[in-house]
Length: 160
Length: 83
Image (cartoon, rainbow over all chains, first blue to last red; front, side, top):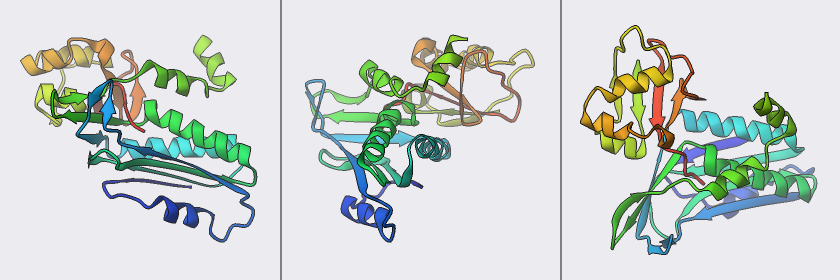
């Protein structure tokens, strides 16, 4: 299990190779790489700056990674999230999970990225040549994507 | 108490971090936010619509009725947009 919050870019191939190196119980590695797009809501985006809450970010990412490891039988997992100013095409985030079988790897990878979108303390500021700077608004579709991973025990608590 | 502001809350208040001594009657997040609004027009504007604001106390997400005390680290920010 590992979490990194960094300004620097990462090499997905290298990261995936290191994740499974030497562990032959791993039968599958799933990964998600998030990239900066050059368009958002129909408007052109020339750059994006990611701000985060140092300390809380690392703590929350480690907690959610631990939860993924409790819910799925993972052999290894990695979250790398960048901050700072990024250009279209730049990598933002890497989530990778490794397990004996594909279902655990694929499901836990999706769980982690859905969760990251709404619960990790990052904020995106988009720059556009035509309309200046704009803070990205949270999306209800992201909230719904994260909510479907709630376990029944969480729902029970919410109902109380 | 240490208050941290992120994203557009940082821009509107013009502050990223401030040390404050809240009056004794401030005991929860809602009371703290009400009191912070009185610190200036930037604070008042940033905290005008609390439905757009999220709070963490000592790096744990907190609701408006969560307790706050001297020495706490309270962060105020918009809904997260990571990933």
